[in-house]
Image (cartoon, rainbow, N blue to C red):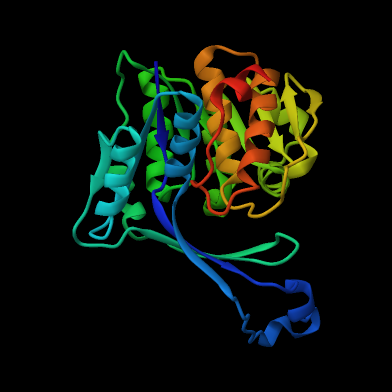
Length: 301
């Protein structure tokens, strides 16, 4: 069984600021904000939610099928996926634009400021989701607005259960849009900040929202995650990381573990335990796709 992962492929330029943003940004001066950060640490990584989730699933032994769009500079990314053994059947290359780019700056407390250029991602809706006997599961992760809406509708029409993961794309949608996604999706995953925004825009509590889908998952970083099923909340504790080095891609690693578990037919709580373990491994590595796992130890631990 394969999992179709709709989302972005992007190049991440990751910068490390050794101070704290809170000490450099004056709240009373936000209306005339003009600030610069010295970032001695700089690197460029393969990223984007579809790529990161596919990488995590592949590490676990899953069968990810990323559906994404890259630009004329994306050949290296496509080649990397193929080298890893990840299918590029649904990766479209466009010559008239650039691949999406994320510029991510992290301070010493792991707070992040991100600037994002969508590039080819804005044409991701060109590729359609259709029913296939080997695709039994999917995810709609942050992508172009049209792509997220259309892929959700196409998953539903094809009878493929999917996870709605609005992520940083959430501000593109109003309450009516989000209620539409909820009617189509089987599961919803958000972090705590996104969860509050989602509930505010929909005018629902987490308990009420969870009754509209199979489950609502709210990840809380080192504190683990909340699972809301049928209006009932349960908590899955976090896993202590060996080292906290870089949070970039931790949420995507968690979602890769979730999809792997769902692909295996696991109960949600077991999926969440694996997600917390994989997130703790990822946060100890720089970049979203530079960690490796001992698959047997991780799955049996």
